[in-house]
Length: 400
Image (tube, rainbow, N blue to C red; front, side, top):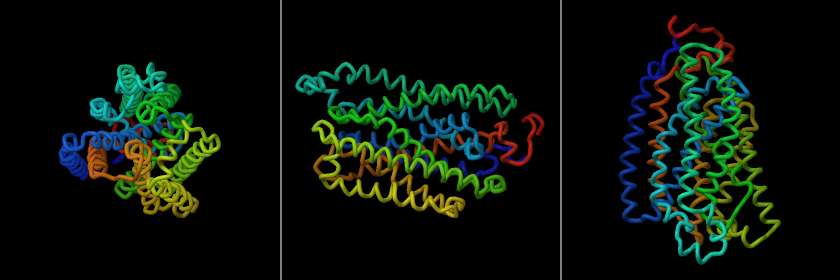
């Protein structure tokens, strides 16, 4: 049965695309390194934006892997290998966090002792916002994410080899605890890495908004990859419009949730109108950054929301992939909107490093993702819903 073959065996061009992305990432990355010497502050700002984008794709997939273990659904069966490959990029992303550590002094004002001493708010927060504790927390976040990803992927591979039903129960148990851990670590990571860019500002919705953004990024990537794989044998006989319909409904739900949380955060801060809270929005809505805000309202919410209301579009892979590409493009712009105004408060600035560094990290991520996708069976052979989705049973690997 061809479904038992690895993705590399079924789709040989994956190796070529992997090499293409990795070479492009290395080449563009080498060009971007010039920014370390020419514009060090801008380089680290651009790097943080791009890094959070690719980390969101991976961590969003990790969350969906756990959600599928707990909830089931055919959408998770046909996308499980895509999601699993994305989560296995985590060790690379852990290593790629190092430039943020090196560039902390260019990113976070609370790393400067003289600034903290002269500011009563920063002095009050110094027990939390200090370099040693920041690094300890980052190590905890990556330890949790890598640990959960490693165990889920390890047990999934064992499930392919043995078909042991106990492994499904084990993954479900881990996913229940793992989702709670994901929520906590992602919330604190968003505070540490993004919200503390402006340590005087705070929002209780920021962590949830970050998680929803990661979910949107992950869903867009999954839909794009599944749309590409679904045109090729043998998945062209397995992936059906209903699978895309389910993913489109998830995408619609996350688009609405992102809009709801974004508007709720704005409404609460607008209603309170407190000086320490409104600065985040005054920097974005009373300068040329306002154009980005309008674009996000229209292209990140209104357009995909309206398009995803049509059943025909949700069941047509070629259209859904285009919508997902649009959402992914808006995720890039949204991440830029969240980070860049902290450093360019007076006006909208898009530098060459913003583009080059994003291309470099995205290419490296895509190459590593394809490397992980190539090595396993194209579908999870012993997922409890595998037979229902594929329509035929398969025996143990040794019997094929």
